[in-house]
Image (cartoon, rainbow, N blue to C red):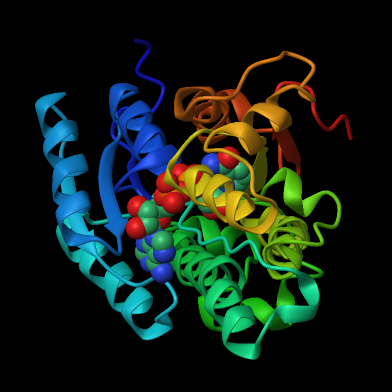
Length: 290
Ligand SMILES: NC(=O)c1ccc[n+]([C@@H]2O[C@H](COP(=O)([O-])OP(=O)(O)OC[C@H]3O[C@@H](n4cnc5c(N)ncnc54)[C@H](O)[C@@H]3O)[C@@H](O)[C@H]2O)c1
């Protein structure tokens, strides 16, 4: 496989299974070293072992991405281990299927603390590190803000960096494209991911750090098995029925795979996408078209 990411250090959150694992393996196949940032320590170790078997370096890093102090510590530990961070894939996620009128505050926080709050503060911490990595001479020569004054100067930088200084890809969802009465909090969080992607792309453009999002459609992972089971409980459908009904509405008439999503993300993490930022790409078999 083409080594588009040779020498790059990539963090993928939620890489213990499903889409995140597919992404981590794909980035490793393209030459990156990986940090497998994952709640489930055993799953993190398994993904890291598979990456090592591909001949790439991998650090299994058990973490709850909702814990922002732990995220900041992870960035420090990764820099101490690898020296730099070039790629972040904000993939860790939780879903819950429950009628809107029954949602509790705990339900709301349980999902949003991971997919919105946790993902944002992970992005922020990694972006600050990517800015710190810009050689001082380049930063000074261009009049770019250093990391402590980013907020004050990001709107009107003196100039723009010319070398690429990092790639960030956030996992939104087709649920972020329109409302979902049985996943109101999840859909709100995924819509926020699109907004955060655009804001971060603007804030980080002066530093030539690209920020994009992808919206998978239906990918039969543990997350979708949970949605299918929850819909079965709510509507009395048989296992697999909810997913099959959904797939029937997809123009390409099949579910996506982690590899389908990973291919799009690897592209966005590569130099082939240097001129793409602030975009949200549907990877959903044509289900959504804007
Ligand atoms: N599967 C789909 O059809 C689909 C569709 C659209 C979007 N997505 C999004 O893609 C991403 C991956 O989904 P998936 O289907 O692979 O899910 P999954 O449930 O199979 O895997 C999610 C992984 O994230 C980890 N994780 C969960 N909470 C975490 C936390 N607080 N800190 C660290 N790790 C945590 C889990 O342990 C798990 O390994 C999610 O953001 C999801 O919302 C999935």
